[in-house]
Length: 203
Image (cartoon, rainbow, N blue to C red):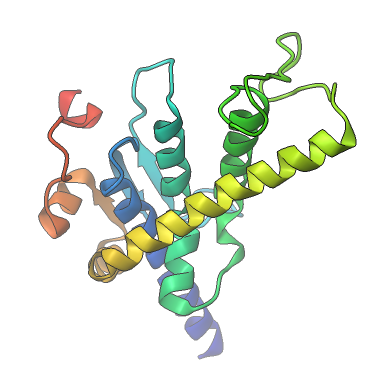
């Protein structure tokens, strides 16, 4: 019985984790629209997965990047809200969030404290940069990145607490069906509360 109980418990955690991504993305105006949400793992280390249709754009403003980070935090925040504890399931989300926050501060000049500076080296791979700054500046960068990440996480938690009932609705449906599509989300929690159509609807 113990292995089954452990499996059922981890499956429930995954369901709420994925529900967190879905709900956060649904109520964040600049997040990419959800196409598919699943609790069926892809690969050995993966939990479930959420699939989005990325917008066809090359320029991102600060609020768009913040919404993307908040959506990525949806799974971790949902776990904390529902279970009062967190799991290792947010690894890929945290990696993406950290890269985005560092990019805002060190590459795109999107931080007031660091200013209009970019330490990006176009001759190296994406997100790679030299360290042409002092240890004091490095500490300042780390502090600003931490502040951006904390802001995104707290905003995501507040959003999911506000829409707490939808976490239950979507997680329950995921546990029953294992895979949900955008039309399922509209059926369960209504249309996204924004005037403009999503890229998915335009597509």
